[in-house]
Every structure is written in C-alpha cells, then in structure tokens.
Image 1 (cartoon, rainbow, N blue to C red):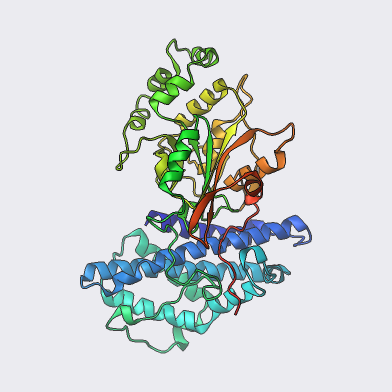
Image 2: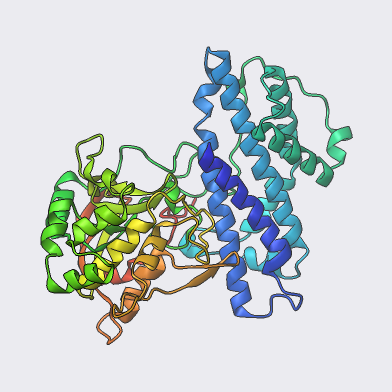
Length: 466
C-alpha cells in the first residue's frame, strides 16, 4: 500500500502546513492568501477522496472465509480510517485558530460542485460522536482479530494516530460505552470521510480512482494518434478518478514525453544539427548510439515490448517511478492531447537525451522542483526542455502549492492557451481527443475546445441537486 502511505503522508503534511506556514501573522487580508487557503483545502479533500476510494476497495474482503485475508484487509482499512480522522481533526484545529478561515472555506466552489458550508459539514463529521464511536468499534475489531504486528510501520502508525486522536478528544476514553466487536465484519457499516459523498455524483462509495480496464479513448483513436506523433512531442492526459491526478490542480493531470521507437528515432534525428549535438557530447556516433553509450543500463528496456506486445515509445513518471511506457498504455485515459514544441530537431534530441537521465528515479509525491531526486510527470517535460547552450528549449509556468514550486500539466496547457497566436507561442496542437463523462466516449475536437479545456473543473462530477 505504498500509494496509500504516500497519501497518508500528504494529509499529515497539509495539516502541518496550514498550522505552521500557510497563514502569516497578519492574517488572511490578501486575495492571494485566500486563494492559497482554498487551494490547500481542495488539495486536502482530494487526498481524502483518494483514501476513501482505497478504503472502499477493501470492503469485499471483509467477508472472506480466509482469516488472514479478512484481517489484512480490515487492518489496512483501520489504518486509513485513523489517518483520515487524525489529520482531519488536526486540520480543523489549525483552521479554527485562524480568524476568517472557516468562513472562506464555507464559501461555495461551483466549478467543483462544493456547496455552501463544506467546511462546517466536514467539521461536523470529524467532531461528531458517531465518528468516535466508529473508531472504538474498529479498534475492538482490530484487537479481536489478533493479527497485529507490534513492530510493523503500519501498527506503529495506528498506535500513534489513535493516541493523537484520544489526546484531542480525551472524553472518548471515559464517556463512550463499551462496544462489542461484531461476529461478521461485513455486517458493520463504515462511512466514507469525503463530506459530500451523497451530494456529488458519481461518488457513491463504489467509485474507484483507477477505473481499471475502462477509458473513453478507443483503439482506433490510438491507431490514428500513432500516425501523428513525432519524437519530442509532449503528451497530456486526464482520467477521472485516477491516482496520478490526486493532489494536482486542474483538469489535465498527467504528462509524458514521446520518444518514438528505435527505428523512428534513427530516421527522425538523421540531420546535420543532431550530428552536431552528438559531437558536442564527445561522441562520433549517431544519436541512437549516443543514447546506448551514455545510458548503458537505462537504454535496453526501451527495446522490450510490454505484456501486450506494444513497444515502449513514451517516458513518463508514475507512482512506480520514471519509466518507459507504450502509447497504448498512456492513452488509457478519458482525454488526451499532444503538443509539438516549436524547436529544432537538435533541441528535441537534447530533450530526449535529458529525459533518459531521469529513468529509474522515484515518483515525486511532493511535486517539489527544487530537487531532481524524485520526479513527477510534468517535471520530466520541465527538466528535459530546459534551455541549454544554443537550444532555446521551452519555458513552463511555475506555481506554488503547499510551499513548493512546480509546473502542473494543467498550467502547461493553460500557458498554450495564453500564448496562442502571440510571439511567445512555444508549441502547436497536434491532436485533441476529448472525453465526456456523460456519454462515456471520446471524440476528436478542435482548437477552440482545447484552448478552454484547462479551465474545466478538476472533479468531473456535477453537483446533484435534489
């Protein structure tokens, strides 16, 4: 559960960030500070919804006939529950201590479907007696299963989270009545933490963030796309309820660099300018051999097809790390677009050469561009196309989130819109495949729709009016 652990850490970080850094002593008297607070609140809800989805996936295992499977599922579920409970309480405590913050967060956010009073509703859920009762019940089940590993990291975090919660609600120790653990865990109702589960569709406790095997882009659309791509193209995608989108602002949530296959690179980069680039690296070979020589250990996997026989033609950063991927895999999405940088082939060769450098690095769940020890999806593009020597590269916008500066995929697409048909334009649109959650299909769409796509809501879930 590495992903759940990373999301747990983000909840802790956000709660601590609000307490320590987000609000200056002079308070919320500037628009930028209010916007930062809202973005922080939305980010917290994003991770909360993700953890709710992971937690819901364990419910089917609660009724397993195999004790070890039932115990493992429940223990992991309890671990997630306590993290949501603890850091929810800590966030509320931090925000309640900031004059004006609750009022700001209670304002509606129509583009996300958040109604009036969202903060108050969340607070009532966290501080209500029913949640504490649920913790007591879960705790009794946890110990009745008798499978706790006292020295594991998960068990340690369960103890720490539970103790932190009890310190914030000391009356829970004495005032709550004793509760017997049920004989069947599957008969016990557990509620999600996301405060609008009954108001936002399709969030109904069954929606999962990765939606395996289902995407709107069709096989024929991918085949058409493959005919249009060139090495150096940059790809953006969006898939509703997909893990890489968690914590990132905006509609477009994932990015990658198209590198092509060995044959297409040899043909595409057979130019005098690229030959000069190879010489500038101290080599007398061609570009493909430069990659093989400079990246002896990293290069070979780009020649190995994936399990479905698709050749690796993309470099992307995913929770497993920076790796080669196929276009067919990347295109398992709801919407996808391709931009072609307005730079020379020598510049594109430089970008691919830089991108190979980051292969194997871990995924950056913190989206921190100050270090390249871990890399996020859009960071591959940001670093690969950074200007170098005589190559102008591309400049992407930086934005602040939770104290870190980064360039999100959505901001990159937004920059295209703002620079379009100006002297600052840095790329052309190659293709836009636009997905529709209502029709469950994707269509090729034009420039007008694409330019406005970055303004779409992050959560593609309309508010359910009674």
